[in-house]
Length: 203
Image (cartoon, rainbow, N blue to C red):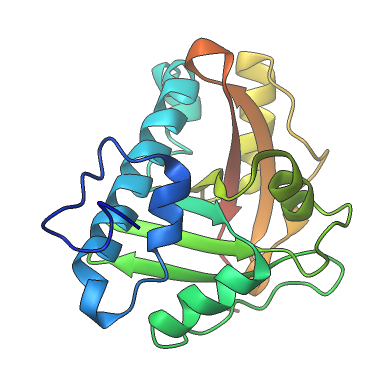
């Protein structure tokens, strides 16, 4: 792909999100471009999310539940998912509950960039990832924020800000997490799916 094949010619700041996502499967000879693409995807995802939750952070009670570093979730086709995972040395797949239409793995670049690469188990199906891919194609599907208590955080957002979560109570997510979601509004009428993630606590 012109402009994305090497670190010297890539202009990640002006590339379309589809081009950046395509570049994630670049192998060792193009790893500089791959890493640049990952950083730009992460920057755009975080910027979009921060636009949507600026008002949340102004409330100190709500903000206390959103103090951790974000992870940007990127939805890709099953074929591209396999190619990206192979290019990265086959990182561990997350343990996703079997009733959920998703496969995923995490990928970090140092301490500053955290991506969650997601795909559907049933292309063309009714699952959230399948529906996203059918409507928008590959791209930023959600932005995840760690929280110490997903139910308390969701209740606080509902009571203080009047924004209802997708689920009445947190659901089991990948690797034993507890999760809930909010569809928040960003600039220019854009919507961003915000995921609150409560990590599994060992007994």
